[in-house]
Image (cartoon, rainbow, N blue to C red; front, top):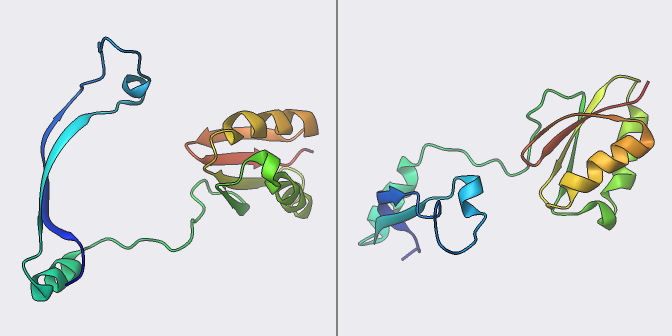
Length: 138
């Protein structure tokens, strides 16, 4: 039988980090403590029914969300791992003033990419989570 759970439900949630005696950054991110209940499918038939009932599609590749003229997915690479060369190449292909959305999940990019933009004269228009919108310099 396939692995997986059916009848998943969160039964309790609470802010357990705010005011905790130990230091934690979890409260800064709205992290909650939870309890949940889940049950293994009784048989292959029940598991197949549970899979068929899922209503979400999971994209196989990240897609653009910021309405940019171009999109580049750096994945888990930090700026020191080479994606800046590709970001620069993508920006060179754009006309002055056009935008490039960069997706990068490596936390160091949050500091490195804005610094690179300042050094190269490109404008970091916005950041939304792991997404960065860069406008090519004029």
